[in-house]
Image (cartoon, rainbow, N blue to C red; front, side):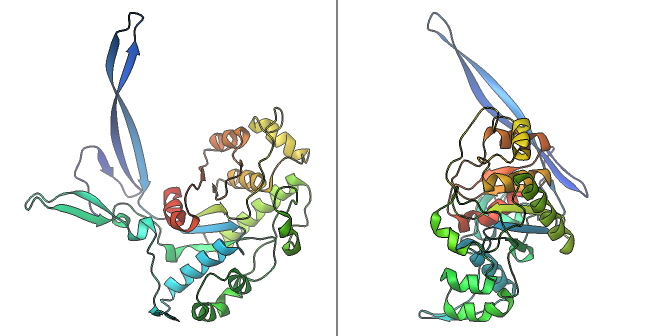
Length: 317
């Protein structure tokens, strides 16, 4: 880290606070066809905690291709494993991670007039991927070692080394609704919550989050949807148009509340950032209002899951 010598930036033991002025131009079109241009300045305040919290990530669909690969990747980096491939010996890295591998232009050297580039992770306090604690839910009870093999993503030699530890990890029971996902998932749905009422499922997920946080002594938990893409839910007045109507619909066990929305509601109520990694319409107006009311960040990934993962995690903390 390096200090910023500016009257707009202040440092305390707990936070870095900065202000940013955004200047633009507002245009008024008069009835006579003339234009009036007015400069506009908006000031934004940003605050970043100086102490990186111990962070956990709970993945919905943990036993899928994405969840197993991210978990294995963190373990391989943490243990500094090497493995053989047909191209030769490989070692782990975080290439492809914006926060871990990218650089940015910080400015110009005052003496040499040369551009100065620094790693992005030096600009602000960011979580180290190797420090993340990973867990989650899946409708399949297959342990993460066998799920990794089933995914067929990683090289066999790396799988062999990771398997002893990965097989000790088992996903928590998840929510399954055959009306919302592809029929080919039914055969693997053998790890389901005993709760069938949607309101009870929300409470079960909240309990899972609290237990995960307490067991691992975490400061913060982020929930990330990486399960199968759902069909779009219907948008209906009185159902998912407002937060109050959604909570009433939840208590009434309305069928049109999707599993991803059940996880989103639980995450918001537990003040956990919720990231939607699939293109379904999880964030109906009621979910957005609920998150706004509780001041919880929700987000949607719009690029390849693996490449966005660590920048998303750091943006949340």
